[in-house]
Image (cartoon, rainbow, N blue to C red; front, side):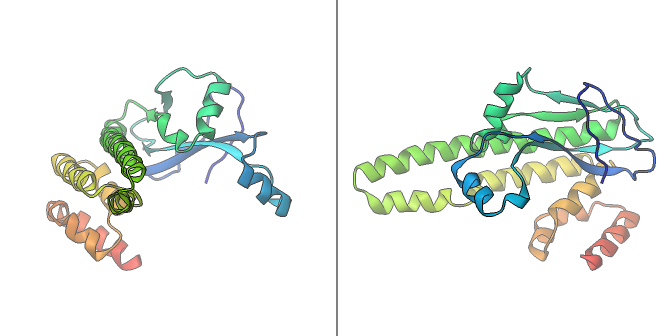
Length: 221
């Protein structure tokens, strides 16, 4: 884990000794606005300190491909505007961040993130529509219909959206199977026997050397 404090637009970290792979970058700063539940927690456990604003994303890092990485946001934000978004429910998801470089693998990984983001947006949009329908059913005292929709909404992903995303993920991984990025994405996604079955057609396309590394990883996890 590397950390730094910066008040400038540019900062430097020595990445030469870091192995290539997927990393997470987190930006945080002090927050002086507390939500009701946070005030209660702070009263009970002041030693934990006040909450912070957090923004994060993942990216592909490879010092051999590039030693310069740039953070891009989807818009130009004033600090107050950014903080207001981060305080809102799921607000951090509305702020699109990307770490870009001139490396091919970094570009491939960002294409994968964009694919997932599209489906997250689709999932949120369709959930919003279902919430409106659930409220309407409730107003009409059609409680069984309302409960049925709320059961769908309780899940992180709507089943049909999740299935469509899985298909897109698999196609993306197969189309880029020779990229160093794909085994890393595969490792993140496959954490159980059921996951393995979902992504089996991707695993079958990996070269023997990659399969051997994944077999070691599976035994260790």
